[in-house]
Image (cartoon, rainbow, N blue to C red; front, top):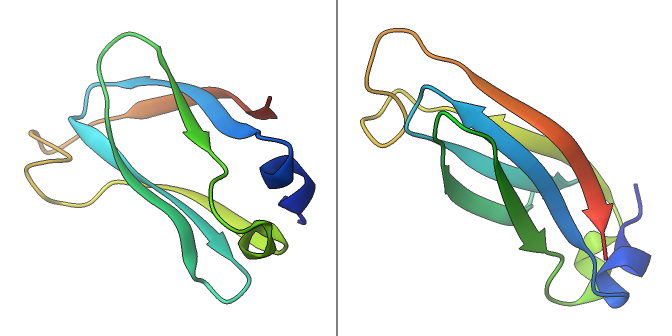
Length: 94
């Protein structure tokens, strides 16, 4: 999907997240699997809104293919054998 208009217009990727894990890694990738956003996000047990501006040259936003919420088996992400997280209201917003 072409997000270049949204980048030029000052939009952000916004969503709310909660869970019983420590954190997740947000990765937004283009068709070449290059990460245009790669951010650790702390997760708590109540919904918190997060916003990530579509920064940089608008050309990198022309071919967005994936939005990934990744949990790694490392202490920064999970503390127990099982966990969960929920994401809601994921939008591009100005």
